Amino acid sequence: MARQAQTAERVETARPAAAPLSSSGALSTSYEVQIFRDKRWRIDSMFDDKSLALYEARRMNDSGRYACVRVVEEYFDEVSGQTKLGTIYRGGRIEHARQTDLDDAIKRRNIKQQQSGAEFAAAADASAKHKQIAESRPELVLGIAGGIVLLVGAVAGALLFK
Amino acid sequence: MLGAPETTTERPVGLERRLVFRLLSHWRTLIVEGEGDFPSFADVDPSAMPDVWPFCFVLDTATDCADDPIVRIAQPSAAGLAGNVIGKPVSELPDATLIAQACSYAQEVLRKRVPISRGGDFIRRDGMRVLYRSILLPMSDDGENIAGLLGAANFREVKEP
Image 1 (cartoon, each protein chain N blue to C red):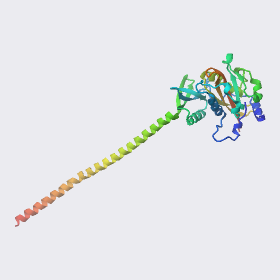
Image 2: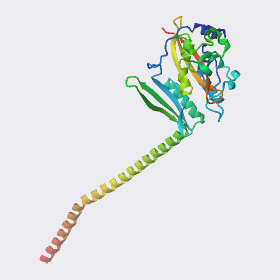
Image 3: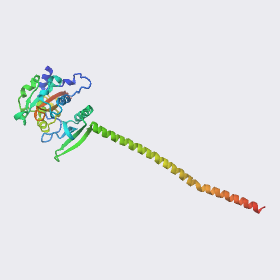
Image 4: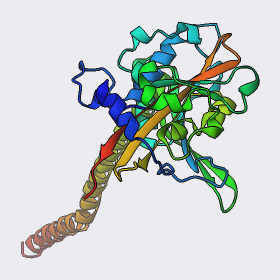
């Protein structure tokens, strides 16, 4: 307690927070932890620190008490006067289910691609064999024709000299 | 405003280290299902959060002071600081002090009706740089109208070369 009082007494002067402020005094960047409840997104809490907002969102997500949790980054552009929003984290059971579906879809696609690849390889192999056979046919024909010619010649010669 | 003994005290595994998250978690547990979005000051039990309570203060926004909440320090042991600010409106808090920093966004909490946590740093009179983190939580007696804000803040010193 004595230490607390001592430290409290030493807190005398302060300077503005390190986080950037807009002219209105509002933070130019803030992070909203939002939960999905009653069919709409509601702000649960707000932070000026990204890591704290993400930490809290993950903590809430891991608790299993919330169907869906997300963190929205809100950036106020003082030059344009516009507010830019971006979701930097999605959690919750719905998102988990969505991610599972996405993973399954990726797995199915990969398997399909692998199957397609195997089929393509088999088709290419068969095509190559057909091509090889087709290319080897003229030699076979010529060989057979040559054999026939020789046979006919031999028979004819035998008949002439008989 | 007090130092941060939780940084030096050994805690059970799994217990949140940061003051603002401990208070935020406690605040959530006080919300009664079906009775509005905010807990009541009547539900706050200091003995249920002995490690957090010494860092807490209350902003009274009831009745005619909603536009400029009056600070009430909830913890009498914080007399070193509280003696100068109890009963004062936020706008009259000593400039560039931790309590002023911690209360500076009270209007935003009242407007957005959600807990907000902010941090920053300041230079003490002795030249020591101090980092702080604070949180303000809306409270209500009827679950709907905000009757005040429960706040907490702590800090740690940063030795600079």
